[in-house]
Length: 116
Image (tube, rainbow, N blue to C red; front, side, top):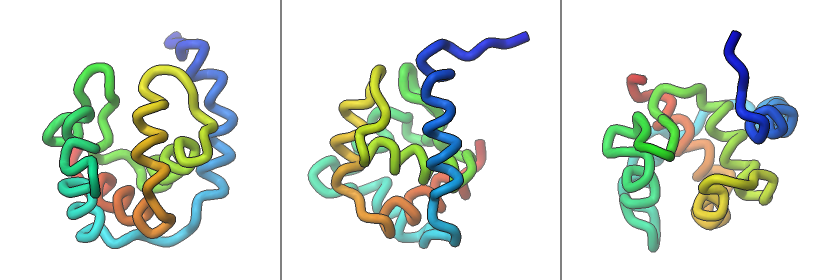
């Protein structure tokens, strides 16, 4: 039996609520690709610098490619509202705070469209 680390287990209820509250519909994956590659002051470093050039993860940042858009969107919403702590939450919160709802949906749609 596999056990989740305690901090991840504690964050699970908040993530489940955020997924349930995430806006329905799909984002513009083409716009999401542009955002992932050229995000404001962060440039392409915002995603690829930490999560790897193919978004398949680079320690300690998790893989993003191929994850469900609703999950990615919910997680970004949690970072935007400061409801995630530990690990690299501070860096993610700084990036997510600059995103609007449309940006979150677009980026989530693009990352979800990539192969795992």
